[in-house]
Image 1 (spheres, rainbow, N blue to C red):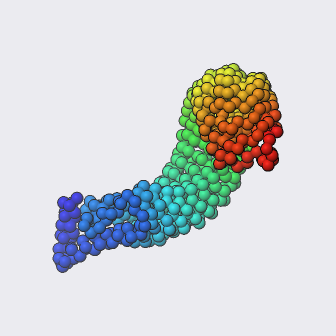
Image 2 (tube, rainbow, N blue to C red):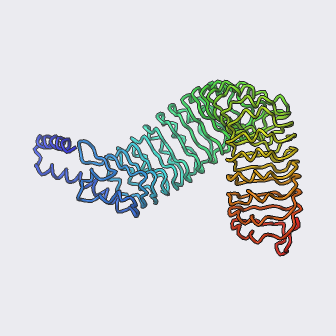
Image 3 (cartoon, rainbow, N blue to C red):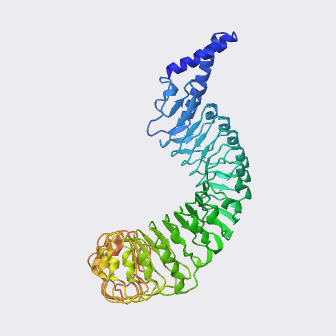
Length: 561
């Protein structure tokens, strides 16, 4: 480094000598370049109010600023080219003197606690290529002066408190490749000038307050690979020009107010697509069959829209598919023929998440469900008008950790084989017509945190072994025909339970004193049973209880429910 610097100074000396300038100009220039950046960095340090790791402690005149932690200088000149202080938990504001670091190319302060605003002087950094200020608490607007930094390739400002519009001058940054402003409070629309950014790879503005339409000018983003605008207030139809950007790998636009149909040829126009998320909008029409041509598609979310008609039976062509979320639409025709697509999905050997809940499927649940890959981990089938019993073929899906079939018309017994699903964490069968006893095998589900069997016609006693599931957070057995006493063992050992509901059954006996050991419970309900005896005084130890015995007059000594 020192040799290179001396060689550069020698070159300057020869240049000055050729112009017959005084020799003192060399030292003057060196002092000037040193002082400009050194003073700028010291002003930056003065704006820091908390430096817990002491990373700036050696920023002093005893060490050359080019050797200060987080600082990199150029090879041929003692000028700062990189300021890298990511994740140092620094607090303070951004000094306007950073604008004097005119050789700066890389500016990284991610994952700190900087506040205040981005100074206008940042626009003087005409060599800046990468600006990384994400995950701080910086407020104010994106300064228009930033648009003077014409060499910018990365703007990463996500996870701050920025407000105002995205500057319409953004289109002048023709070298920009990454624009990330997620998790701020930005308003206004997406500037049409973005269409000038033919080098842009990533546009990400999720969780803001952007509104308006997506302009047809988006067709100019010929290099765009990732387009993320989740959770904004954007509306209107998606321009056809977006679907014609064949470079796209990921499109994520859920939780907005977009509407219209998806084009029938979408799967032919986006051959490299791996992720398509359009959930929680106002789309309608049928699901395009052409999506089956996107052979690399891994995640498809079309939930919470108004899609109608059948689920395409050729989705089995999507051999890379891992997530298929079609819940809460109007798919199907309330017919047993609605389930024909399941046969094709058996080819999707990488499928881990399948949600079909809240649609208009009908008829008995087919045995073909058991032909799905054993890699399936999450299966959501609630509110789907399913009739008949739980098919025995479901036993093949041994790696399930979530199974929801609530709000259907299921009959018959709860199968014993459900106790074999050792990874099960969520089991919801509420609001059906299930009969018989609660299988004691459910006590084997040692990772279960939510068990909801409420609003069925279950009989018999509560299996004591269920109380051995120490991971339970939610246990709802209400509105059945259960009889017997509340088990004393297990249920009332110290646990993580936050909800325990045995109401509207035929339970008798007393409420155990051990109820007071439920330190985390905030909902207890034993109403509409045949319990008797005193209310345990230990209930006062349930410090998190929000609605203790809402229906019980606590001034009474005895409990008759």
